[in-house]
Structure formats: C-alpha cells, structure tokens
Image (cartoon, rainbow, N blue to C red; front, side, top):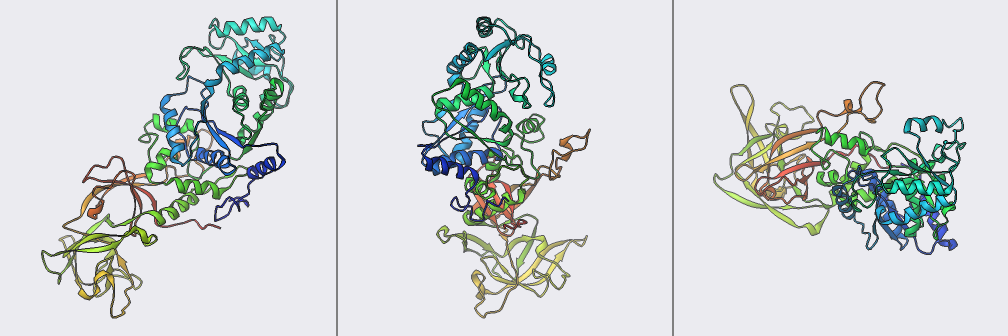
Length: 561
C-alpha cells in the first residue's frame, strides 16, 4: 500500500495527490466547480482497474460538490458495440455512481471536432499525408534520432482543405490518406512527431450511422471533448503521461473557451490477474471462460456475479490510494476487504459439502423441531430464522475421526461437540461399510443443552455445522479460485504464452446439502456458509434448485497494516 493510504480508508485521512491538486485549485479560485469525466471506450466490459478510475472520477466530483460526466469514447467504430455501452452504464450505476444529465458520447461532438480540424489546417498546423504505415515508421524515426518530414508536410492550406474534404466525402480508401497535426518531427516524444488526428473508416457508427467516413483519433478528440464539456480535471492513468504534451498542444493551438488540464495516476495492477481488455476478450472468444461475467474474470460484472459488493470495491479503491508510481497490489487485499464487508452484511446459513450421516440415538424417531438460528451475529437487526432438527442429520466427513490425535477437538468416540444452534452431542461410535469407510456416526444428545447452551457450565471445545437429513436440499456449488497460477501472469519467458499460466483448477463444481431456507435463494443473495466461506446465489438458480458461487473463503491471508 502507499504511504497515503490508511486502514480506515477515509477521505479525510487519505489526502492523495489528486485531492491535494483539487484542494489547491478550489482554494486559489482557479476552479469554481469541479468537473471530471469517466471516458471508457465501448470495446469491452469494464474491469476492476476501471473501478478504481470510476471511484476516483465520480468520487472527486461528489466530494467537492461538482459533477462527473460519463462519456463514451466512441471514436473507433470498428471495435465498438452497443452491448458494451449498456454494460458500462450498468456497471457504473451498480458501483453507486450517477452521471445525472452528464451522459455523452465522443460522437456527439464529431461536428465540432471536425470544425477544429479544419481550423488547424487553416492555421497551417495540419496536413493530409499519403505515407503508408510502413513508410511512416521510417519517416517517424526513433526517440534518439529526429524524424524526417513527410513529403506532404508543406502542402498549402488550400490543398490540404481540399484533400481533407475528399477524405470526408469518401474519395480515399482506408489507409490511403490521413490528416496529421504539424507539430515537431525532432521531438524526443514520439507522440509529438506529427501524430494522426483523422483517418478514413468506411464503416457504420453505432451512434451516428453512416454520416461520417472519417473519424478523429482519441488523442485529438480527448482534449477537445474535455474543453467542450468544461472539464476542470481530466484524470487519466499513467500511460497517458507521454500523451499530455500533445493534449496541451491541441488546447494551446486551438484555444478553446475552456482550457482543461490532464492529470495522471497509476493504474491498478492485481496479482494473479490480467487487466488488459484485449486479453480478457481473447479469454472470452477462445471460450476459456464462460463469458465476460464469468466469476473468475476481473470484470465488474464478473465480480458482481461472484458476490462482491459495490461497497467493498469502493472501499478497496479508497484503501489502496492514488499514487504516481506503478505497483502490483496483492489480490489478497481485495479479498480481505470483500470478506470484511460480507462478514458484516451476509446472513449465515449451513451447508455440508462432504456429508456423512450422524444419528442421534436418543432423539425421538419421527420428531422434528424448529430451532432459532441467528442470521448474523454482527448485525442484531438481521434477526433469526428457524432451522429444522431431526434424529438424523448430516455433518462434514472431516468433522469426525475414529482415531483422533490429541489436538483434534471435533467428533471422536467419547468426545462432546456443540451442534450449531442445536444441542451438545456425545459420540458413542460409528458404522462402516465392507471397505472400512465411515457411513454413519452415532451420538447421544443432552436435552438440557437446547440452543447449544450448557446450563452446568461445562466447556465444549468445538462447534460444528449440520443439516437435517429429512429437510436438506441439494445445491450446485461452484468453487472458484484464482484464474492464473502465477503472481504476474503476463511475465512469461520468450516464446511462452501468457495463457500457459491459466489455472486448470480455477473452477470445481460440487453438490452440497443445504438448509431448506436456501432452496429458493434469489439470484445475487449473499450468504456466509458457516465454517466454509462466503457464497452468492447465481442467476442460474431456479426455485428448489439453487446454484451458489463461492465469493471468498473464510480464511484471511492478508494482514492490513
């Protein structure tokens, strides 16, 4: 964690550098109203890295009484889809943020951006170039050596205006002509060596249809969109730092009424995770996962399906802080924060994954009683539920040992344990099949210990969970683990493939016996299966046939400093 972060995760304690910048801008009067924007490209689903940006962009606007715009960066129609647009809006809302009237598309400004491109030509600061991509690599050069001017760089303003008009009318094939900004071919920053600002794309756009066959590049459109919307703090991830000189050049050269500024922060990188939309798309297309919302994916929709809460993701983003330095965050910290939130909010339930029958010999045959069970000891308002108890129940197989070591405190002949919310029972023996496998455990119960209490004050060292054999329901349980086996999945030797680090055991499907209250669990409902972990009902669930995804285990391996 950064030195700026803190365990409480409170904004007052975590004065990261973006907050300090806004503090200074507001105090000086340079900014009257804070306006930020979140500008995703709708070419894939958002992931946990985007969640950090969302929390920062929307969070800063909210904290300072300003506004944050949601703007679709739809300048490349060859890679974009309405499906992605809809998913982005859903994810931002689910995380707890709202853009109000500030929902825009880059394509909303195509007319205005085009006018600015024409203005740039008239200023003698842009020209139409016919070099191929391979030819441009030669002319562009390398950072240590100045580039060579394009042979088309010194065309007249009139000629460039006519050629750009021909591009706009579709008279050039894709790749046959581009519009370049005339900046500095000797700059050590390659992004300043006459970057392309318009290219021909003869495809339909999901928002503007067939109106255009030329589209602006993001680096040209970005500062102009910010200026048009009155953005005061254009917050980007650190890889855009080298793009900022061109951002500033566009603003200074075209002199829009509002002059925005770009600030960069380090993106989120998580262990055992890939954060590239391109690679996530490959996992989906190659069917290595079940889709964008596969609970093993770091996508926001995948985390939602797995059972993560928006509160835990927001808290995680606050805890890790905002810095200018790239680092790798331990995914165990994210799991710790999720676990901490679920512990406070998730109702408890009982589920047995590897069942063996336990018979209470002195309990009346045919009798069933309903016992009150606390839903969440962390939340008194959660109340109680009734769980059925009968003579035959199921317990976990590893909660019994016939020949137990000294420090084994669960069931073994002669040992007492507490059945959660039920009674204290004492093991008196077991049954085995011909192969010597345990098929039933026999116990007696103490009727005076209803609810697990011991009126005589005797100490019981262990409590185990169970389900009534006559009332248990079968549930499909999907045990998800990390998708990759390597801490940095992208770090592979030359000639190797990052897919080689995929975890073959990232999903195991088992059948569990669950208490009847879980039979009709609604999709998205979260529970702590006592002594097992946190689980969420999957959308695949049907009444009487629940399906649960493991969100996180109970064991916390991360120690928050």
